[in-house]
Amino acid sequence: MEKGNRSRIFIFCWFSFFLFLFSLLFHVFIYHDLHLTEPLEFIATWLPQIAISLFIAAPVLIARRNWWTILALFILDVWLIANILYFRANNILLTYNAIMMAGNVGGVGGSVLMFVNWKSAIFLILTVVYAVVAMWLAPVNKSNPGKRSYLTNICVLLTAFLCSSIGNYANYFLRMKADAELSKALTVNPFFDAFELSLSDPYQYVRQHSVFTYLPIAFLQGAMTDTGAPVELPTTLTEEEEQQMQEIYTPSDAKLTPKRNLLVIVVESLESWPIEVTDQSGAFVTPNLYALSRSSSGFFAPYMKSQVKHGVSGDGVMIINTGLLPLQQGAACRLYPENTYPNYAHFFKDAVLVDAAAPDFWNNAAAYRNYGYQRMVKTEFNQEKVEIFEKVMELSWTDGEMLTHAAEEWKAMDKPRCLMALTLSTHSPFTLVPENKNLLFPSSLPKAMKAYFSCLHYTDSCIGAFLADLEQAGELENTVVAITGDHTVFKSMLWWEFQQYMIRHDMPQMPDRNYVPFIVLAPHINRQEFNEECQQADIYPTIMHLIGCDKYPWKGVGINLVETRKKGNTQPPQRLMEEQEAYILCDKIIRRNYFANPENQ
Image 1 (cartoon, rainbow, N blue to C red):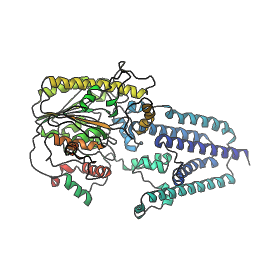
Image 2: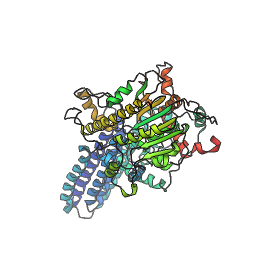
Image 3: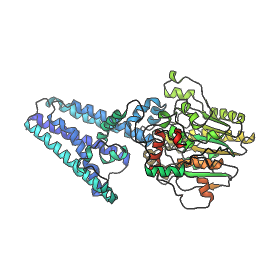
């Protein structure tokens, strides 16, 4: 065999090995599972990965140069690292929409860079190792490929196709095993399943196929639908959805007046578990939130599932205000800020949104009126002149400053009144608050967790002072106070990495995931606690009940948690629809601007 052909075969094997290694490492970092126990699952997972690696490496056998393989690995490095960081930060893989939105969402860079660790560098290190060997062999690989090289290339492609087909048949049978009825709905021949351009669920697509094929498909599908306008998806309600709407939306001209004032504090990135965390001296990280969650005239739901999507904080604010779940693609606050939204704020004689952040972080300046607020109180600065995230944060209000403005507004408002305060100081990467030297934790405490605790302790003290000031001034009489988080921050990947540390140091844990808390203070209820898993969509109907506006036409897709617990029912509440059904229904409602249509009034 000629020396050039031998070097080609070596580079082909070397390149294929690194491609598969990259795919394996990515799979382990994201899914934490090698699928070694179930033979069928092992075949379904890894044969497609081998197939794609062979397919990408096949041109090496007929190429005269190797340099392109180094470039290919560096491009894949960027793609893999970006997805790992984004997944650690948001619990979802990168999509075309997420990439296109990055320039419009302040803080994405800083928030994501907080999650950089050794896993982010391992791909670059491996690429350097590959490059050294490839460049060493480059001088002996300049000869023209012979017939044997072309024949070998064809054999490799056929092997890749065979591996892909077997893997996809295994995946097909796994799906059949899980749901025998699925066979009636499958119309795609599983033999070609690896090549389908289907990306309805990126997380499952990468699990069943490859992160490498996800790269071109994500951009291809995104570019095909990116026309400068919101993506056109089906908005017509099915017969079943029409029936569901009749249960949760009953048009009425009745005028409702809230029986109580409403004060809502939405804490940036607030999770439930830190509320019970104490340092080595026994001091609580959030002493005020802990005390409020145990109030004798309060309600506490510690296991509230965050339901935000790509809109993150914008989604959280929308869910809390409207009882609608977010879009499946994109953020409603950016795509549809002028829609007509159901809400509770419009009931009140005076309703104000106070936002600590720059006005265009999540387009609140455009959306607040359609959430029912009469005015928005915000920091004054020119967004166009400041593009650097850290500078934007410096010019935003601290939580102490924001809540001072909120207190002034609240005292001057006419009754009945509604105020929503949006905090910012706990925003990742948790650099807005200096490290708290008074909290005593082991030096081994993960850096992100330590910074998070410092920010939470500061915001907690601001909330405590804010409520104490209003209480002392007699401004909380006949008022419902609701405190919650807009979304979780330590997504499943980072949460999984923290768990061992939490176990070793006897820190509070959630069963399998983290949650946002929902704390309510209301003078007319006795202490209640909802210890089952609930959903962010439950906040809206619960608030509607607490302010005495249950008869509002839009009930929301959640349930009234307070009423459920008050009736003494210890069983998990029955929901009208499954969560995914609710997502699809709300997606259609938002895209068609359902509540603006006179036919639906």
